[in-house]
Image 1 (cartoon, rainbow, N blue to C red):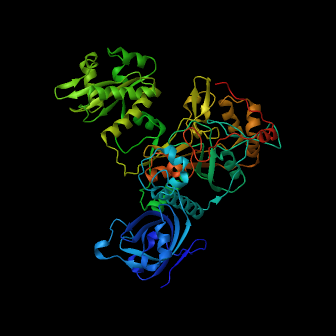
Image 2 (image 1 turned 30 degrees about the horizontal axis):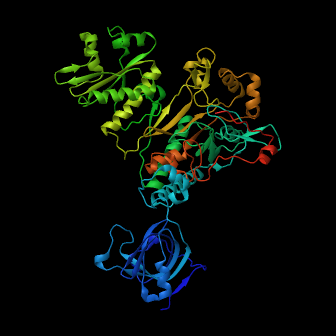
Image 3 (image 1 turned 45 degrees about the vertical axis):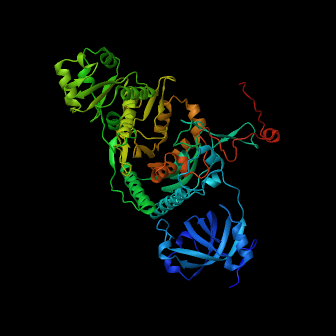
Length: 598
């Protein structure tokens, strides 16, 4: 059979590399992709060809002619090629059980070299140990790696499952504006100068919040959107300046209807994308229980190590540090680290240093030795207090009891983070478990000491619990919100609320937040006006798709599930954005750049 070598023409691909199996032996196939590796074994060249499905081995033999074989000798890693050939079964002793295609080879009969490639700055393989900065600079190469491609196949499946589920449940997908009005609440807006309205600015949306409420006023009743959102805030592993969320809003639903619907959606997502069955319904706990027991409004319940309040026991004890904290309105809380009495003094000091990050001034401890409790603070307690401590914490020989005394927020934050650190240290977190829960009844408001005013804990359009509306003027600190967060393994993956839908109540909310009437009219007048034309009761929720995918893929950062992410300094290493722009562009926008003195 005469073989050919082509350089410019196209071979039409008719098979994916990893889909070729033994039952295709004798078939002619055309495969195309990138060369993973090339080996020359005694005049026969073996190439592992890779496409998005995986690998297949292609064999080039000199019996097909010098011109053909000389071209095969030119092949190197990451060359892009197409091959037409026949599928052959490997001899019994040559089968590679590590490859899905390990029982066959393709004997090449036609070759096209579409493009040569330089030597990549890192290996195109899974588990590559290379600085993330280099990976981001050459992101198009990083994305060739099989583990990265799996992340984006998963992303596709998740988004498709969402759309299918919501379509089945009567939702319409409706896009909302990217260029909108600035109304910063929480994070800073990204601002876009207007060329045709000089001196004025658009803002990129932090979320489609107001637009989706207006769609409820418009009568659509069930809306969703896979929305791009933008926040100019300090970054971390699970934050990016631009991110994707599933945005949902419904009319004539109560809170439990929304929770029930989104639980079923989450179960569908995991079933379709991962083949995992999620038990329903999810556990529900109040914000107060989450903070008091776990020190966090997004607790990880895959392990115990609960927080215990011992303030009543220590109120009149002889240990002044505890007594003073309680008198100043604080609390004393503790964690029983079971079977940890063998911790060294250095390990305990390291934990004390760790929780100082969260404001704790110290970490008291009691070691439960075989000879009884041992601690520098044990002598300050009488027998009744000692017995109460041991009973409250269910303390046994081998345990290690940790205590923090301070303002409630500091105590909860410190011990909540200590709880997670201990669980990691002890290896008691089941990484295969998927622990979903709802946190409900958040406070509507939070007090800012610096600005001496209230802020909305979620956003200013969240409805108070009906029976707490009467507290708005006389006891705002104790108003509960009709808000809810979905938490998975200690990570908030979604949050929402029932909304205010009457103008009078919305105006009262703005007043609570210290907004003058003119300010609220300037920022949100169009929403208030819409409320005068018949607004249905409504509520909604938004899920962070990137954050959810990070957990589903078992990754440590959302950068691994975003195709072209930014670094923690909000820069793009590949395109070198943000960048300077020309004077002409600035002049068109009537903008002058002033450089700060360093």
